[in-house]
Image (cartoon, rainbow, N blue to C red; front, side, top):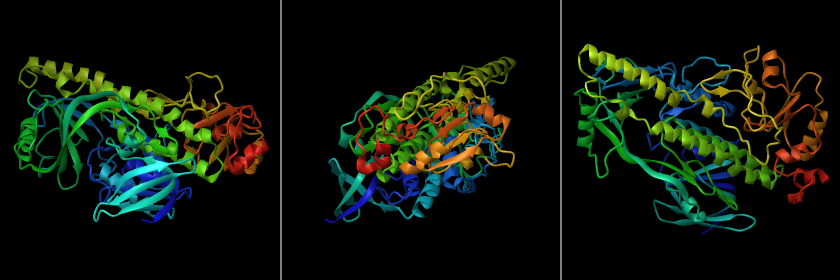
Length: 553
């Protein structure tokens, strides 16, 4: 066996692995992505690409490409309609789920998008394939790996002919999903609650279904009935739909014929239902007890699993990749210290715990929880009952579909590479759906539109960005960055709105658009702290003169 050498070996070409490849490849870091399947896009599960993920795509220059592959156009209503069944009466509608409406918002530069995950994966793969530093090997499975202080040696197997090959890399990242072999390799265990419910994901074709009900277009219909409580909605062109019966009893198996019958019973509409795929899945709330062992790390579903209510899972994996990607790039390129690697779990695990709690709360209230006898009757009493249930649905489920507080509001409050300033949560700035923009360290940099129509984010550099008020001194910061080989783009605050969002004279933004530090004047040595070299009072081993020997100590 011959050995090929890479900076990073990525196991898994789902959204997490593909995003990591783009983040690394865009920075010139060589990476090999292996995938046991022969292509991306097998699992037609996630359908919500939220505003944060689409903002990452904007930074990579491919947000418009994702919009172009939307099956029904980005203007298709992203409403969630609750009905007793498609053929039955309506109960409530929650508008603009996941902020997918194509309208400009002060809070983010890219709206969410209702699009099948397999289309997102193909957009990501196509872009990653254009990056010279990225190579793919499909139909290739991970077998085993060992590591020492300088790198990782992995054994891979060609699934067509069984031939094994050896690959060496500086780092290995397991983005290989819920049944992660890489997680098993490092001995990490998943803690939490397994088996909150049993569910099926069924994809089918039903010509005429859109016209066979009177509820109008929506991205999802929650069916509240005692027969087959479920979720259903359009997924792709050519009358392709998804159907998800929820909270099935143990031992309940579904054949293609069973699936078609369940859809008829759930919808009350008798059509020719052709089953395209079906798979059982178990809703769980689990998190790995560790995300890293030396040079081997975990990302995405390999280290956190939660019920898919709120649309967090796939999107959280993409943000894992962004957080880990720039840090790995900084480390292997010599301008980032070892604390960057430590910060990955320190930052991501607490926000994963918050999101798991949110998703589990959403999962606790499903469609069958709103049913009451007589809800489908044609009587004044039934109409009053439906109205009351509709109010309850709006009160109890709106938070699941209006998620900006979670999507944009997660802060890295205990990160070793964030320099805190003692400030608490801010109450100023624009707020919507539970989100309050804040420039305190650790939080996502507040977004703003400029008078010329540009997003403030579009001015951020590929490295760090130093936002500064008029008259603020930034030459010391730029000189320190130049000496340490760190890229910093200086961007002047222009408007009153920007000054309100960024009240300090200086605000340092990380490559992932989170705030690293803010203050009134630059402090010597600050750059070393936010790039993982530690505080000057701490012992440190400058690797090969990295950050110029920690600025010569």
